[in-house]
Image (cartoon, rainbow, N blue to C red; front, side):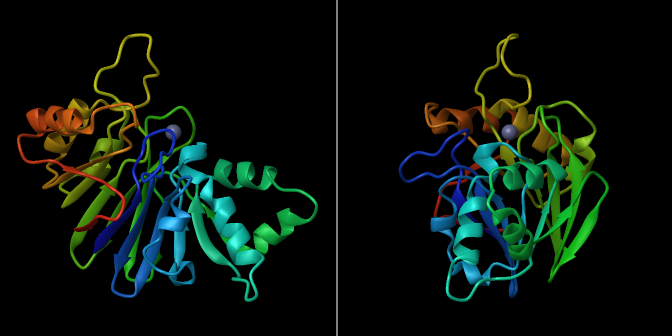
Length: 246
Ligand SMILES: [Zn+2]
């Protein structure tokens, strides 16, 4: 299994670093995971080669490019039909709500939407994906990816609370958000500090940690240092254009 990073910027994109988006690949199966703004143009393959999409939650920095894909696949000479889309129900409701004048029905032709929530598991080609509720302010799923005896856990956006840690147990790779370097008592509680990402990766027995969702205004090397202090192993950084073997 491999992860291609299309975007990793936290909260909003900047030139050269779109917001969250990855392509998970196993054999001939390719799944687009989170569609943050800027990720569509960074797909490492033609978008017609994407077999399915998985979206963690409805926040714009994780799903805006669903609209870009919709336009690309609907208004091209050879439209795509019923591309599988797995996400919490509000993702579909929000994206549908953005459209009018008949576009809503075209959306349901372009995508075959299947709502997912904690405890669900789906098979997409050669990959099995299971979903877990995360510690975020809107319904958000973390995803555990399994293929060929290798495992990946992606946090989406999350705080450190909740029952989700078990879903990341003993993974080969943990792809974790690290939106903060420090968090005050009055700060939004539903993101991780890099040191928490490292601590959690160690606690669940992850073999490797990759940090993502670091906002453009933070020094990323400092986030890596903080995570390495609590993980006790080298930590990688998700950057556009980089591919990781799981
Ligand atoms: Zn979010």
